[in-house]
Image 1 (spheres, rainbow, N blue to C red):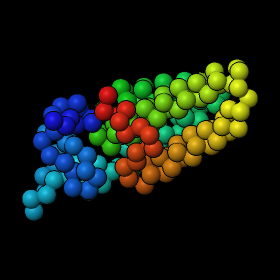
Image 2 (cartoon, one colour):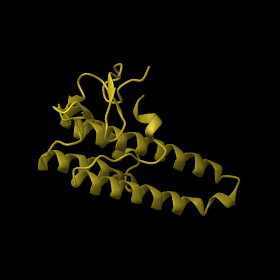
Image 3 (tube, helix red, strand yellow):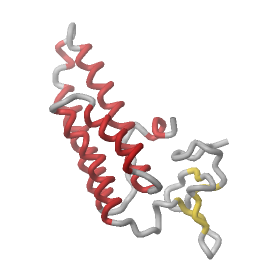
Length: 157
Protein backbone atom coordinates (compact mmCIF):
# COMPACT_ATOMS: atom_id res chain seq x y z
CA UNK A 1 0.00 0.00 0.00
CA UNK A 2 1.20 3.47 -0.80
CA UNK A 3 1.18 6.38 1.62
CA UNK A 4 0.53 10.09 1.09
CA UNK A 5 3.82 12.02 1.00
CA UNK A 6 2.48 14.95 3.02
CA UNK A 7 0.49 13.25 5.77
CA UNK A 8 1.92 9.69 5.81
CA UNK A 9 -1.60 8.22 5.72
CA UNK A 10 -2.76 5.48 3.37
CA UNK A 11 -3.36 6.75 -0.14
CA UNK A 12 -6.89 6.55 -1.56
CA UNK A 13 -6.10 7.77 -5.08
CA UNK A 14 -3.37 9.26 -7.28
CA UNK A 15 -3.12 12.73 -8.80
CA UNK A 16 -3.91 12.54 -12.50
CA UNK A 17 -1.39 15.31 -13.20
CA UNK A 18 1.73 14.28 -11.24
CA UNK A 19 0.85 10.72 -10.17
CA UNK A 20 1.51 11.42 -6.48
CA UNK A 21 -0.36 9.16 -3.99
CA UNK A 22 -3.06 11.10 -2.13
CA UNK A 23 -4.80 10.67 1.22
CA UNK A 24 -8.27 12.04 1.99
CA UNK A 25 -6.84 15.43 3.09
CA UNK A 26 -4.90 16.01 -0.13
CA UNK A 27 -7.45 14.60 -2.55
CA UNK A 28 -9.47 17.03 -4.65
CA UNK A 29 -12.21 15.30 -6.65
CA UNK A 30 -13.20 17.02 -9.87
CA UNK A 31 -16.82 17.28 -11.00
CA UNK A 32 -16.02 15.30 -14.14
CA UNK A 33 -14.76 12.34 -12.10
CA UNK A 34 -11.02 13.00 -12.06
CA UNK A 35 -8.80 13.44 -9.03
CA UNK A 36 -5.83 15.70 -8.43
CA UNK A 37 -3.63 16.83 -5.57
CA UNK A 38 -4.30 20.13 -3.83
CA UNK A 39 -1.28 21.79 -5.49
CA UNK A 40 -2.58 21.32 -9.04
CA UNK A 41 -5.36 23.32 -10.60
CA UNK A 42 -5.66 25.70 -7.67
CA UNK A 43 -4.64 29.33 -7.85
CA UNK A 44 -1.77 29.80 -5.41
CA UNK A 45 -1.56 33.16 -3.64
CA UNK A 46 1.42 35.48 -3.74
CA UNK A 47 2.22 34.92 -0.05
CA UNK A 48 2.34 31.14 -0.55
CA UNK A 49 4.51 31.49 -3.64
CA UNK A 50 6.87 33.85 -1.77
CA UNK A 51 7.19 31.49 1.21
CA UNK A 52 7.82 28.48 -1.02
CA UNK A 53 10.48 30.40 -2.99
CA UNK A 54 12.14 31.62 0.21
CA UNK A 55 12.41 28.07 1.50
CA UNK A 56 14.33 27.05 -1.62
CA UNK A 57 16.58 30.09 -1.32
CA UNK A 58 17.45 29.20 2.29
CA UNK A 59 20.09 26.94 0.73
CA UNK A 60 22.15 30.05 -0.05
CA UNK A 61 22.62 30.54 3.70
CA UNK A 62 24.53 27.26 3.84
CA UNK A 63 27.51 28.94 2.17
CA UNK A 64 27.95 31.25 5.15
CA UNK A 65 26.60 29.15 8.03
CA UNK A 66 26.36 25.39 7.42
CA UNK A 67 23.00 23.77 8.21
CA UNK A 68 21.26 27.16 8.60
CA UNK A 69 19.47 26.64 5.28
CA UNK A 70 18.09 23.29 6.39
CA UNK A 71 17.11 24.76 9.74
CA UNK A 72 15.33 27.62 7.97
CA UNK A 73 13.42 25.10 5.88
CA UNK A 74 12.41 23.18 9.01
CA UNK A 75 11.20 26.37 10.71
CA UNK A 76 9.18 27.20 7.63
CA UNK A 77 7.69 23.72 7.63
CA UNK A 78 6.52 23.90 11.23
CA UNK A 79 5.52 27.55 11.57
CA UNK A 80 4.88 29.12 8.19
CA UNK A 81 3.40 26.37 6.05
CA UNK A 82 0.21 26.12 8.10
CA UNK A 83 -2.63 24.57 6.15
CA UNK A 84 -1.06 25.31 2.75
CA UNK A 85 -0.24 22.05 0.95
CA UNK A 86 1.72 24.05 -1.66
CA UNK A 87 4.16 25.55 0.87
CA UNK A 88 4.34 22.29 2.81
CA UNK A 89 5.23 20.34 -0.33
CA UNK A 90 7.99 22.76 -1.36
CA UNK A 91 9.34 22.88 2.19
CA UNK A 92 9.61 19.11 2.44
CA UNK A 93 11.36 18.94 -0.92
CA UNK A 94 13.82 21.72 -0.07
CA UNK A 95 14.57 20.38 3.40
CA UNK A 96 15.22 16.84 2.22
CA UNK A 97 17.47 18.04 -0.60
CA UNK A 98 19.47 20.36 1.66
CA UNK A 99 20.06 17.63 4.24
CA UNK A 100 21.09 15.11 1.58
CA UNK A 101 23.27 17.73 -0.10
CA UNK A 102 25.01 18.52 3.21
CA UNK A 103 25.65 14.82 3.82
CA UNK A 104 27.15 14.46 0.32
CA UNK A 105 29.42 17.45 0.81
CA UNK A 106 30.50 16.24 4.23
CA UNK A 107 31.32 12.76 2.94
CA UNK A 108 33.20 14.25 -0.01
CA UNK A 109 35.26 16.47 2.29
CA UNK A 110 35.94 13.52 4.55
CA UNK A 111 37.13 11.57 1.50
CA UNK A 112 39.51 14.42 0.63
CA UNK A 113 41.66 13.69 3.66
CA UNK A 114 43.48 10.93 1.81
CA UNK A 115 42.39 11.37 -1.79
CA UNK A 116 42.99 14.49 -3.83
CA UNK A 117 41.08 13.15 -6.83
CA UNK A 118 37.84 14.15 -5.03
CA UNK A 119 38.83 17.83 -5.16
CA UNK A 120 37.25 18.61 -8.60
CA UNK A 121 33.93 17.16 -7.41
CA UNK A 122 33.39 19.86 -4.78
CA UNK A 123 32.78 22.76 -7.22
CA UNK A 124 30.52 20.52 -9.30
CA UNK A 125 28.47 19.58 -6.25
CA UNK A 126 28.24 23.23 -5.19
CA UNK A 127 27.00 24.22 -8.65
CA UNK A 128 24.48 21.38 -8.58
CA UNK A 129 23.13 22.55 -5.22
CA UNK A 130 22.89 26.17 -6.33
CA UNK A 131 21.27 25.29 -9.63
CA UNK A 132 18.66 23.00 -8.09
CA UNK A 133 17.78 25.54 -5.39
CA UNK A 134 17.39 28.36 -7.91
CA UNK A 135 15.23 26.21 -10.20
CA UNK A 136 13.10 25.21 -7.20
CA UNK A 137 12.67 28.86 -6.18
CA UNK A 138 11.67 29.85 -9.71
CA UNK A 139 9.17 27.01 -10.01
CA UNK A 140 7.68 27.87 -6.62
CA UNK A 141 7.33 31.53 -7.61
CA UNK A 142 5.50 30.45 -10.78
CA UNK A 143 3.12 28.33 -8.68
CA UNK A 144 4.40 24.98 -9.96
CA UNK A 145 5.36 21.86 -8.05
CA UNK A 146 9.08 20.93 -8.02
CA UNK A 147 10.92 17.75 -7.03
CA UNK A 148 14.67 17.81 -6.53
CA UNK A 149 16.74 15.10 -8.20
CA UNK A 150 17.68 12.12 -6.00
CA UNK A 151 15.35 13.02 -3.12
CA UNK A 152 11.89 11.77 -4.11
CA UNK A 153 12.34 8.69 -1.89
CA UNK A 154 13.40 10.84 1.08
CA UNK A 155 10.39 13.16 1.10
CA UNK A 156 7.98 10.44 2.22
CA UNK A 157 9.99 9.61 5.35
